[in-house]
Length: 182
Ligand SMILES: Cc1cc2nc3c(=O)[nH]c(=O)nc-3n(C[C@H](O)[C@H](O)[C@H](O)COP(=O)(O)O)c2cc1C
Image 1 (tube, rainbow, N blue to C red):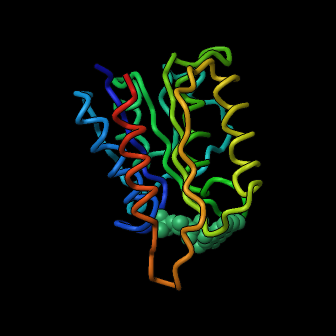
Image 2 (cartoon, rainbow, N blue to C red):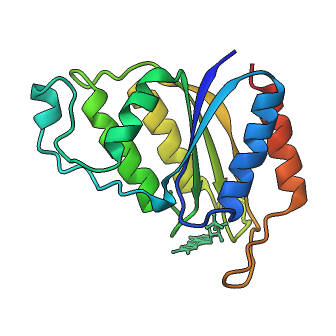
């Protein structure tokens, strides 16, 4: 059984990415994992300033925002799931801020060991739609020494403005992906 932290990095509660994360979580719970979900859309997670204070002060980030509540959750879990919409061919800004702020947990560029999973949604569904994000994610996991357990990328979530339309097929597939995490 894993202790899994699912970080939903988008502004739309019950939007495509949130729904994708929820279905994945259903699968994880079916398999008996302990899961915590955090929706970042209503949180204040500022970007890392690169001040280096965390490296001199016991891994305590100098920025006093909602990330302070997330550090203990990151420390407790063995697996981090990053769920993000594709924004201009990349992960969302809040996902990037969350990841950058993990720098506070590093020692000499070594990070606490974690498993990781990437979940994404996008409007387009070209074979290259997620290339940049996936490439970034693979470099990230490699650099942080994280064990990549895989990713699920749901393209074709078009929807008119305000009409979020992830396909049931995606939700079923990501649920099964969740069930397969051991
Ligand atoms: C600012 C912004 C940028 C976007 N950029 C892209 C993009 O580069 N490629 C794409 O396929 N979809 C893009 N989309 C569409 C979203 O990725 C897609 O609708 C996603 O499923 C929205 O997730 P949400 O419902 O969780 O907010 C963009 C949407 C927004 C709001």
